[in-house]
Length: 473
Image (cartoon, rainbow, N blue to C red):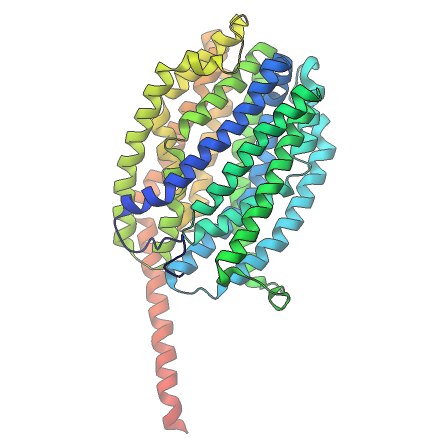
């Protein structure tokens, strides 16, 4: 990585300074990403109506699950490449990229076909209200059916972030966001295409963003350029990425199933509550941009230092970023509580009193638990950066079970849909416990030390064999 590149070496320097340089572009990008999701909802809510807004809300958990299954592979790519960067073994980067290409095409096509055929049965299974089910099905068929587009962009972005470049994905995302706003307005207002128009606008803007990102990546970083001679996949690397991605996909699927169950419960309360859930989720997503990317981006820091076998830097980084994320979550909580009514008003007309009331309760309740949301993301990222996916799966099981059980139980105990708003936050609190036990119990350090001892023994053996060859000759 030349000095002129935007890549950052995470194995040297102050952890907080490094994360600020690395995560700030991701945070800005997250804001733009949230803005274009907000535009989707705002355009529908303002120019079509609450039923169209509820259609996206009803399908959001299903679309999220499909996209997360795809991006789990790209997350695995980021982990593998960041560890190789830290260890100094850059030769596997291209083999990782080639593996990513094959996995992107295969998984993207499979999930696209799956989305198209299960859209309506899935919405029926979730008891989606009749007045919004057609819109929900349309949205899933477009966004899920062509998920290979977002998968391609995420693949390129993951590779760039693994080598420490978070600026290029930001630039591409800003372009995508601006285009999405323009296409949304044209599709919905000018051509009256409703939910389908919003979906098409999103796909076109993502496709343009993906193409720009890939072209720039190959031009800027010669080490990432691949030729036809490189296209033979390395099955060992491919399998490593796939197995890690499969575990992360299962973890994402479990969390998404929990969200789908909660969505099913919410659907039983009618379109007003569904619309409120959509609004609240969008507002929460915007607030979480203040801290989420510092937590998510930390996996690259851990991956590079884990590859460099630097235990002390990992521990130091966790201590510093824990405090940073905690402070940012408190800021996010404060701003959410102060500006809740204003933010909700961006999506819903004031005369839709029931939707506004339900949306405000969602925002205010869940904002109070933001520190636990930030910390569960941080510890998940820490362990994923080490490749310790199993323990994060256990955490997901705990979080999932809590969300499902509480989303059903709390509304009964409280006599209101308000109980649903508490299910996810309590799940965050309980889900973080396994990660804390594993990290502070030192299990990862024992594992890493054994790996270092094994590598030292293999190196010594190789050196001994090399030294013995001249004597034998």
